[in-house]
Length: 140
Image (tube, rainbow, N blue to C red; front, side):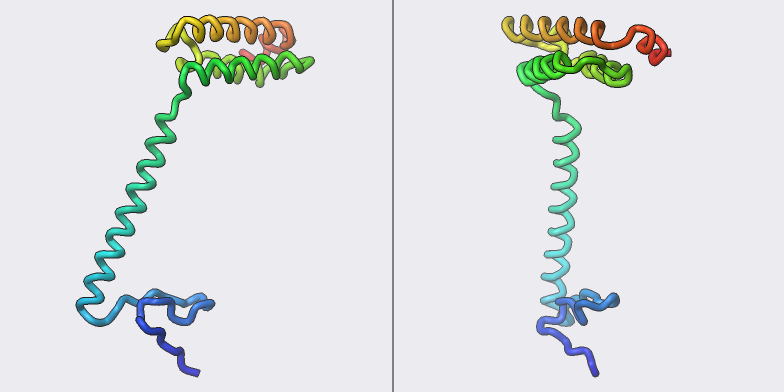
């Protein structure tokens, strides 16, 4: 049985088969328009992907948001009985990032005070709830 060609011919030929292909138009005017559309689509997708990567790479939390996250993390840590040394190390790594420290970024007075209190509370909770012998063994 012969494959029926669709009109216009740039639609899938034989859809549902592993060898289905996209055929460009045959006349010169339609081919030129199809190539322009294809070039524009590729450029648009490339621009969208690049923009997404740039936004994701440069998305640092604001000092207020970072402080709120630290306060929420401190509340979660307070409910835990014992903290795994690896988790404690990751929390210390997070707290050490510049975006989470108001002494390294510009913060308003009240946010700086909340940030310092949240950092101090987290440090106290980590010291209390992490086994000291395991912490030193994990740090080596």
